[in-house]
Image (cartoon, rainbow, N blue to C red):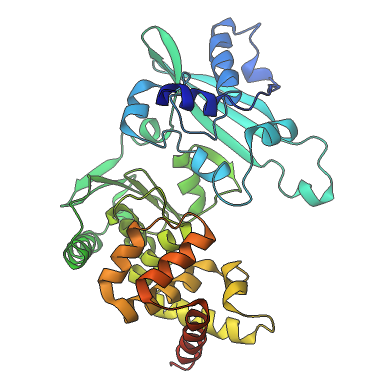
Length: 370
């Protein structure tokens, strides 16, 4: 069976219908020209947008440039606790707020609202307000990400590794940009990484503005102060977030890498959310020692915060096997918990009991640092 057929079956493996609700600004009787735009949007929602495949309703250029071409997918349809399209659209029915002509394109703004939500779910209502653009491609309408339309008139500065985009000069800092270049140089040299593809870095003011560039005027799932997708980084706090996200861009690609490794290494190298690794590790160690049920297995279930937890594990591995040990871990198949354990044991020569013992020692030593 060819790869194209496999991808087609993955993309269309889950059949469901989506009910679109329209209103004053999306009425196709008084505005018949928007009917094909709404049909395109509906077909896309019904085409399993959580799956990455050659989706016929998305524009070809973005599919060629970006593996994960729908930037909004990364939030609501990715990660533990996220939705499937069938479940999402069955409850939170899309209500079209407007379809607005923008030069030769159309802006589609849609509210995902659950009319029958109980008191528990009501605080999540609406779960999102999405924004897509529709563009003409070979005389057919196709969907496109909002980011490139909404930032086309922004300022731009190009450094060695990164091109920065920002709406006003106050969001950009030359010193921080130079620090980013120096940081990239140090990581590439230290781990002998290949030169990364050009990194496009968008600077905004806060997590909600991060969401706007991802295609959300309002969102809950995937909310973050910074986000990296493909070779694009969006940072809501330039002075605090960007080095962590740059590590993601510099690390070699490995589809079989466990997300704990994928986040633990950037935390260890660059911290997260405005805090250094040492600060995060200290806070984590204090909370860990206060918990009655704390253990390594318990920590793996993210009872506190998996980011600094696995930063500590990365620290342990580096102390035992150096940077070469981390490079092996980066490239190992760790896509399940068992494979992650197995890779750690192969790299360090430890057994599970040794790993857990070393982790407990690490926690106590970290908590005692001032």
